[in-house]
Image 1 (cartoon, rainbow, N blue to C red):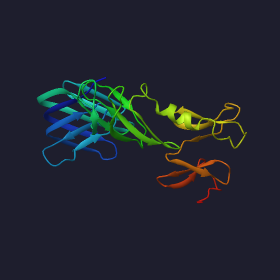
Image 2: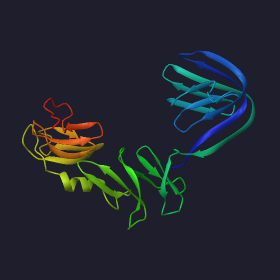
Image 3: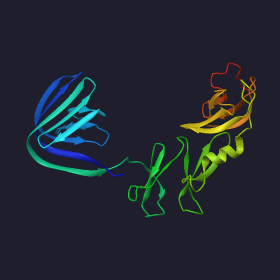
Image 4: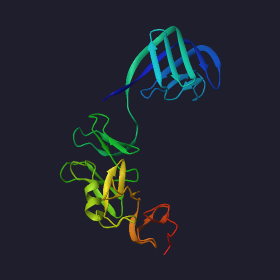
Length: 242
């Protein structure tokens, strides 16, 4: 879904009520972003003279902009309007390849790879590395990520599922420390190793970003991660550096 930023240039009075009460008047540029952030810029520097970040409510009318976030409020009264318009905007990101559908540049922003032109979007693990290699079936870039082992898959989960690759390698490979049942690879927000006896047993662990490299003194698997060797149970007191 395309989003837009509302921009108003004019002579305005800006009033901010909250942690830094102040009133200002002048020729300014008012920017209302899709996430509810309101910025008021004057001629000097990059810092806005007034702002409210991700406001709960924003109202834009012909002669005013009002934003409210808890006990903080920002109001901009437009006395004389020089220009006003809406412009399409999206999350800027790092170029990571070419969209096979429209030949535009794919960009990565956080855990999302998207095409600004055709608006196709793909989620990726936060630790994923986007590869130069393209999928032989759909033409999208492939990515590499670690969950117990190193997996390289297509960006499109419908084409090649990262979860399925991890599941094939580690589903039922480890025992629940509380009831002895199998630990399953589950997707609940992130990837988990959770007990197959749920809801009778609610034991579950976030799947570490790293490679499985042995067994902890507690009996659970250990992983070599970017921050060092650790037990599947991050709170384990028996973790060993062997």
